[in-house]
Image 1: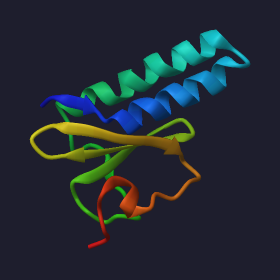
Image 2 (image 1 turned 120 degrees about the vertical axis):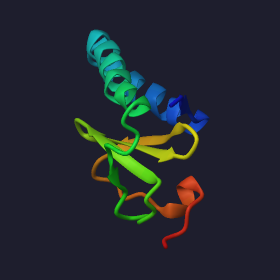
Image 3 (image 1 turned 90 degrees about the horizontal axis):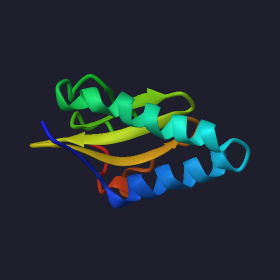
Length: 100
């Protein structure tokens, strides 16, 4: 299965990496590489992440990466929808979903 990143997800990754780079540019580079390494297996195991509790839709899932949630959708491809701090609740409207 193909993995695609939404513009919002890529923007969030860039913002987070820039924030980390303020203190440690090498740590920011490692963070991005490790993030993409965590997402890679979703191509073969798209349902390995848990269903996002706030949404409750089986195709909207997440994997946890350190202090971050990588939220994605599974259809004919895996689409990475957003990346956000684990402490932040996801509002369904942010990803075009309403609770079931």
